[in-house]
Image (cartoon, rainbow over all chains, first blue to last red; front, side, top):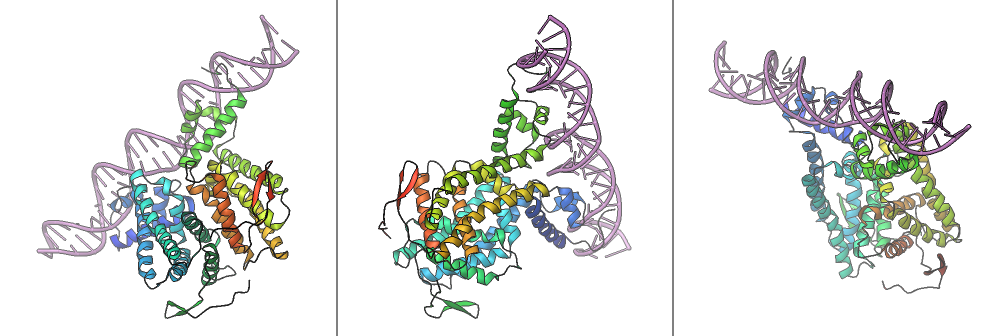
Length: 218
Length: 218
DNA sequence: GAATTAATAAAACGAACGTTCAATTAATTC
DNA sequence: GAATTAATTGAACGTTCGTTTTATTAATTC
């Protein structure tokens, strides 16, 4: 046999991408064989090489694509906040909401850095640094304006990144809390870490709008 | 050739354990071949099977051994603290100091859970839960005594675990801060997260002793 | 409807994988 | 010093790996 009826390069490509994310996230890059990936897509192993030159480029494409999307999404969403405090809360909400529904990407990003070739790894590491620096810039800004009271900005940045990324390890959609509820609780914890008081907000047309101070029951 | 002069089962076994930790931490369990491991030990691949029945048991032994040591060490060290506040500070200091000098174990523990057989994984997951629950118990205790002011104990526990474990990702011994300095900064951040004020301490004979309130420059 | 291009299958490549087995020698026991 | 046990080698097992090559058919173009 050869070309199958109804075959379509675009559909096959995205079927490969989707299946690869599932497989890599579940069993790991090294443990994922090309034969198993082909099985999942419903195609012969050789068909893969029409879309990627090799296995490594597939992994890189997956990780690079995710980082590009994260950076673009935050750049778009972060613009609507103005003060450091607003930006800080927005960042935590964004990070948790965005990543909770992209858990395969998060897992791959955390676990498969070492499976990248040195050149590819350098590119991804650079993109990750750029993203994490956008939080650091917010903390710097908030210290300048005295909205925050932080002892060590570099350490606090890392602590917050680790804290909010940790959500993706345990969160399940059938959790006792919704994603938004969890995000709010992490905003509260983040505010404690940076020594700030919360400006409570409600959602209005998808944008976070201050509604004045709110009494917390702690 | 056969048995080599000076060969010793005990020494070979620990050479295997050490080389395996380095290799698994660096390239991952799946990517570590038995031939490469044998090379690192300076032995033929077949020699390995005198010490472990298979590759999987080696991984399990490494991970199980680490968890046993963590639990034993914290049980011994945690006893010297009495109030929830003291225990909390002691836990963070212990966690960071203990794991910073066992980075291979930490990496393996975080990355290779999925490489364990289901039965082995269940055992390790249970041990990890036991360790993390010892922090949770401290938070529970501190809420009862009103030393802490926490909104959500389960979430705060996870947040703190993620935060302090994150240190192992970026810490290098040539960092601008020593391990002890970093640990103290994370104690400070931990105290903010649980809504407590610090009781500053100095080391006296290896034990943490309160020295009264301390002004922090935030 | 013929020519061309796109998408796949089928089969095979050599290399590497985890593991087993038999043989061999060093160390220990008696 | 003979017998036994401990530790290892060298070679091989069958399997699976990522990838390449060639042939074949569907879809598209003209």
